Image (tube, rainbow over all chains, first blue to last red; front, side):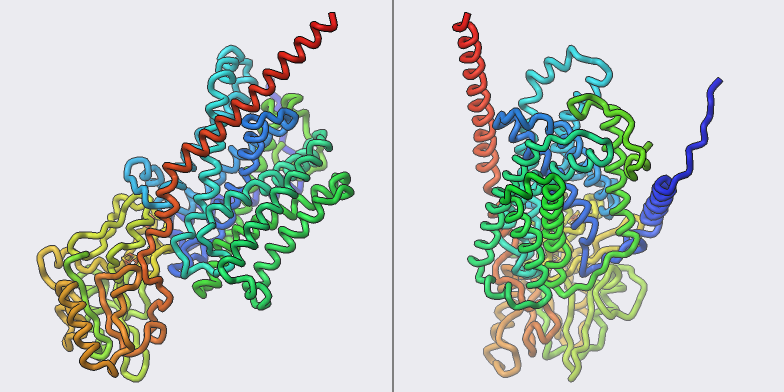
Length: 388
Length: 251
Ligand code: SF4
Ligand code: SF4
């Protein structure tokens, strides 16, 4: 006889259900009455929160995937191997979120495959589209062994790792770096529309270089979140090293960024203390210089809570940068008004939650961490609560 | 260079709005009052006060940004001049709207199957060598249709003959690398409500100068990554062998 149990009603479960219902409702509304009915986007502001946050940030957060696979497989720094699988998983989920966001954001999502047949190599968006398609495929194939292993299919796996993995890793790093930079290139076409603090011919380089510290910071934050959610043991010495690397790469990025500002003759305007200058300073100082100096300090790196706080600041700083390019900088450049509607926010939060739920599901059922599928998570944790 | 073009002379426009109505009729739209460009209005005669008016519509650029940015090549610049859009290809990414320096393409925000809408320079008429609806109805000759070359010459003739009448130059001669639509303005572009900061070179080359390097960058980057992979791996192998030998030397 099967025993049916009614799930216990808890606060977090209610929130999850509420969110799921809201998201479903919004999606239905979008496909019935059009994008205008759920968003505050308009002709003067064709891209908003979804492109800025879900897409650009989703991809930027997946940056951990290419940084760590490059470090471990291309440069063979094997001691970071424990980080590979969780970051591949996040990168894969990150790209699924990107595709999810695209399906809502595109006006005619049923034509999403068109770049395969209608080519326009002059379009940056064409390159972006191909990168998304190919890299998602590569990530899926990097992710597949987790599943095969889980079901005990070992023989083909050995061949897979021997012949396919190196190709996948190289292709993955190549595609992902191209994708990171091409997202910056998207804006190179609109010099008169983006505020000069954010417009630059060097956007592809800036986006690529900044993705590295971002990826490293994201890996740390992820590890910390897994600790909170699953009582997963951290590797303090590894995270400390990652912190060091983040500091150096951040310094590298910030140097390029400020040089770019100087070369374009915008340096003086930073201290004009108008809206643009405050946004820039917040991004550059609070999201860049401050965490960089903190990460250079040994006492910060030794204290895992302080380290995580600082790395979170790095991530937030980069998200802020991407949002400034897509939303604030564009508004300051064109004078368009735009405040995302509550439905845009709900969808964005919904996407992130779906990502977390999938992550939590995967680590409990697949060999993502080195000790295999994780035991039941800590019961007090909201993320774990939502997904049990 | 495209064959046909339009010349709009601001000093001749009396703001009667006949071209708005003709445009709507020509494109099977409900007749309506126009207050801005949108998915139902390809043409807008803006009242600037003091009996001065501006027309807003697609400039039908010579090297159009929209054609260059569309990932699925939904936009095409026809030989004749008009820049047209193909509904069957578009996936609605709205990159064309973001990129167009004149902010022309508009989106059907309240449609289930949204289209990008903009002036198509009456392609169906122009391909039969007929003037556009707006040019054929204009009672004062403020908008004229013709060979772009002729129109440009005519514009410069008017500029030379009456320099005090105009704000100096032909809008559209150099904007975004030149456009099929040319405008003679009595106020400068900013005061006429037209985008004043459009670069005087074609924009597609900005992104193309990045994209055209990809065929060089990808192999170099690929070779670098592959090389690093091999190099560092080999080091490990060497280390393994040495370690193996040391173990055996101890025996
Ligand atoms: S004005 Fe804009 S929409 Fe018209 S052809 Fe030029 S780039 Fe394209
Ligand atoms: S919205 Fe349509 S026409 Fe415009 S760039 Fe995207 S695919 Fe091309």
